[in-house]
Length: 166
Image (cartoon, rainbow, N blue to C red; front, side, top):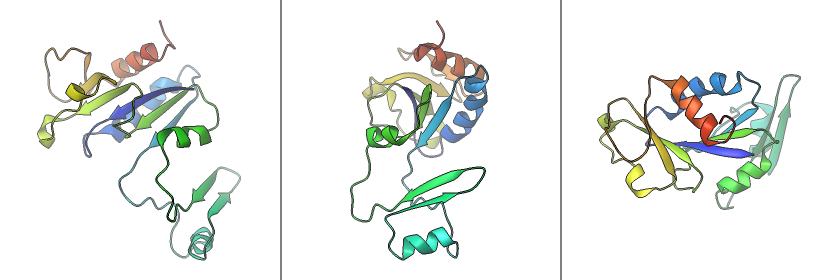
């Protein structure tokens, strides 16, 4: 599986960009999965639901399945946070995995940068950031720069960068 990431500070627009990229990346039949890192407590079921009751009662893993989807919920308890490689190994095979977050991991990434957030850019200190998308012109920064308003160009870049288009 080929891996490409989107990195940036919270609130920069990574999720919005991922959702704009997915239809463009999958339009030609490419199978794409996403993997998102969160600094928050991830809750995929709700109190009162059977799966939540199973977890609260001590289950290490709970699978919830229906005719349209299934989900595996694993409680970490005191285990360390899984690495990106650990998580990718759990995915079913696809053509491309888009990784949102995991900004310190060494896979190739596009940084989503909004100067208005007041956060320093990541690209000067991370050689894995191969391009930047921003809501303002950045000038020559030594790598491709895209407008956040141009997901078609960003998708074309990702396809070329991952070897799906030459």
